[in-house]
Image (tube, rainbow, N blue to C red; front, top):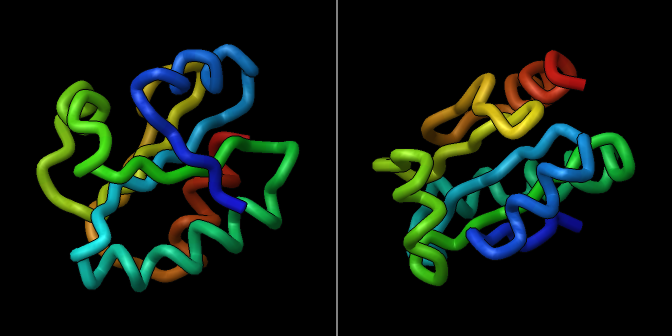
Length: 104
């Protein structure tokens, strides 16, 4: 299951040394709802290899601001705490999986 990622727990997640994938979303966002099952599937399939989670932009305004997120869904791929790739807008699982595999 995708983990809830907030400005409070992100640094601890980064400190695990695993790649971190953050899906910035909101409940009212149609494309976000299309991406949600893909994020959940990746979280399940890559459990133990990467931390894959979601940040609700309405519950945590600091994290999207910190990363300059202006559109949702925006999915950030972090390695060693640095953004190494991102996906803005809805996409297919293959695209997300390719980006994830590149940072494993």
